View 1 (spheres, helix red, strand yellow):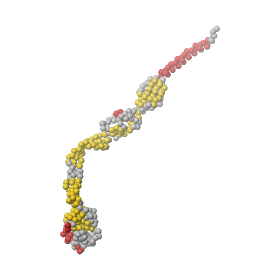
View 2 (cartoon, rainbow, N blue to C red; view 1 turned 60 degrees about the vertical axis):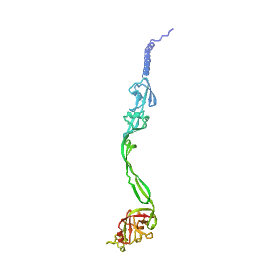
View 3 (cartoon, rainbow, N blue to C red; view 1 turned 180 degrees about the vertical axis):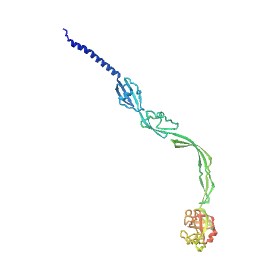
View 4 (cartoon, helix red, strand yellow; view 1 turned 120 degrees about the vertical axis):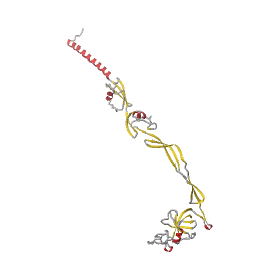
Length: 358
């Protein structure tokens, strides 16, 4: 026997059926729409992968959803304005700063990964054949890498070079030691050099000789030097000496009244000035010698040339000792002491050869 429901309940079931159907269809539609609109995206951020489930469609919106910020030099593939498929991928190549020094400028620029050569081309930096780049052009760039561009310039010039002559000394045993004679005067030579000069950023770093041509040959100065140290003196004696020299010889007297030397109003003598006490500058009695080894002449000398107390042999006058000096006695000049002023006047000025003895 069938159960009979009340009419009201039957009507409620008839009303609920379409509502339930509506919600089921709506759910199915929403689920389908959600499935269609959803995006599963893999973001490769310069080697770091991030997976994102989003309902955003454009690349730019997906990156914002993922909280990723970009530098204006970063490269994004696909383009920011493009729409992604339901399963998509975004690749980000990050830009980074490098430091370029070129032509006196310091440039901080943002670049994406590439070779040094590519970066320079991108920045409009033109290289000449001789220019130098550090690091090498084929080196891959890295963040904060310093890149140095050195401008290299080569210039060829011609220079004239003076080749100074040398002095060549040749021994002569027949000439006395201390004396010399010029055989060949000598003169400088002249050479013309072709040179290539290399500049790096305006600073000379290298000079290379390309060619050289002699315009005038150098001639050395040749000088004969005496080596003889033996003197054949009067009386047949042989004297060994250290060196010989030519001097300008004058004469003076002791400057005392007894010598007949003129005295002025101030009491100064003509020959010895105010030092007219009959003594030499070394305090030795100013008594003229005879030129023998036992009683040598007294001479005034320049002690920088002939040291004090040196014994010398004066050609034609015999032995002498350097026991005095004077204000006008300079270099190769000596003054020979005579007993009287008249003897000194008669001697006058003469060129003599003297020998410095050991």
